[in-house]
Image 1 (cartoon, rainbow, N blue to C red):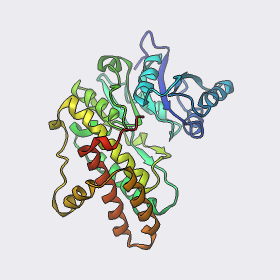
Image 2: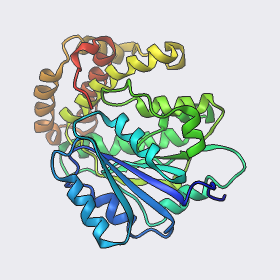
Image 3: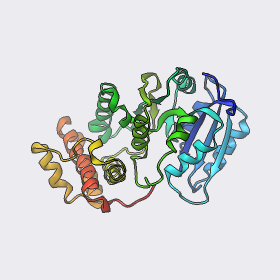
Image 4: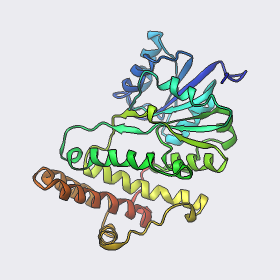
Length: 319
């Protein structure tokens, strides 16, 4: 693959951030150690609320990275930040890397390599969530994280668009053809799934690349924080369904005894009940049989996700 005539860099790494000053060192330190040197870094600060621009400037002064910051004067949302970074890039391969990822030294090299073929591809590297050692991670976090990756790699090719995430790449020409991330997604999640589906519909092959698995210093480290994100993600799903139709996704109504429990619990699930239940579960999880603790957290998370789908007004925070 050769860089396009108007693309001076092989690749651009786009890092959207909001309040990420304390964690930007994860991707930026790693990017300073890359085997591939022909790339630029664009950090988009979605309203600088904690001095993130100063962090970026300190890396610029070190002179190792070709790095710049785009700073919004106010919060415009993660999708707007992603689009601003992608549109400002001067490269053939556009790589998304969220501000809590810690990629390996061959991260850029591997993304570039996978775009060298004759066909357009979208490249996905799954993430390995890094948790603090606590009741949540022991009962649920590590187990579910491993299970998710196992199921993703076993998925059929036509379903891999579901896994478009924080560690992905596509060519500039394909980004422009698709039209970028859809800025209607202001709640948590689904802007990435939407992009993956648009690429799939455009005939792009989605590659799940095990060599691009990347450490993720995850923010959801308790039962309550994980379930809260499930609530917001469930609500954001409505935008995808409105745009593409419900037939694209699997049936959401859970069945059987477990489904009955999820549906029943979802009727009273909101941010307040999630916080209270999550705090209670985490306080007793280490004293319960591990499978029981895992099921309690799973019930909280799945009920929250279903509540977001059925009662989206319960989740109105924008990102």
